[in-house]
Image (cartoon, rainbow, N blue to C red; front, side, top):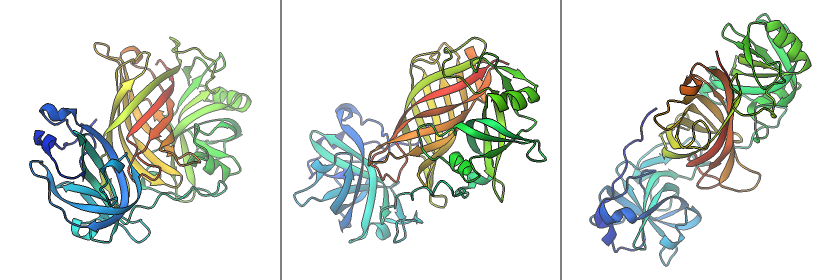
Length: 444
């Protein structure tokens, strides 16, 4: 996975800055300044307000700053920047050479790259995201991203009965992942030997209500058709969904177990031009039981908790209105990967109902152990009913590479937890997430 991008360095001389409280736009996780300045506190922030002064002098003896401006009439601020306000309630915000500027339409949509003179003009309403530093009680705030006018929040999801329309290039490229639990209610439903699922017990939404797969099913009388491929793997359990073995007995898995007990089906779905098309990667018969013990030696459930912080927000693509290739690093909880690193490279896009994200993940044990699992991840972060910065995350994951204790094993799984945003209407992806992987994994 790609490493963390360049970071902004602030000179030791920052300690002696005596100017009034200021705001400076910097990188997401800058390196600590050398010497005593390494004790400075730093946190992300966001503000929304009016530009009341479009140019200020840059503090002396501080590297990287190229200009600044003053924001007043602040109606929203996140990151505890209130102590940085002057007696008029204004905030001074500094910029640097890689600060990004975006001009949006009157509705806060269709944001395109722009320049400081256009975006940071007197009287403009702006939204600023960056980091601030506190050194010896003095605030220095620098901005990474500036939008004018502020970005509009994502629209609410459509009613459940409406078939979701494709919303991104991914929807046409068979890259969306799904994982459902249901019974087989129809066989040979198309020329590809597909089967129909109904009586769902799990749409793969986790605690996220009304996810896309659930809305697709609702638009088809709570049914979806799934097609197997030559690469589909069939799994059969004889102990109620604890331990699985691979099988070529399609008939038993689909026609017997699927009809009577139900299946867990994972795979990919795409927009086929007229409707959504689901293809199966793994079919488990019956669905995984929730009463099985952890890590059976002959295959079954495997669980791992991880907490990750965003170390690089990635690049904003104004055409797709998405943040691409953000970098995440963290640590695993107890178990086979306990204390080892967790990594993700994710792209994020605001869609109806929240943020959609996709990319890759890898969890590893600490050296000298070589145990690791890696694959793709695709899911949603959804806001709670009330305004809060902690959103629900739910995703499907593949198992593409295994090493060490699980070398040669395969399967699929899910990831669920929470994502923390800087504000309920944050135009940037979250900066922290904590979640649990739940895999069904078997040898061979």
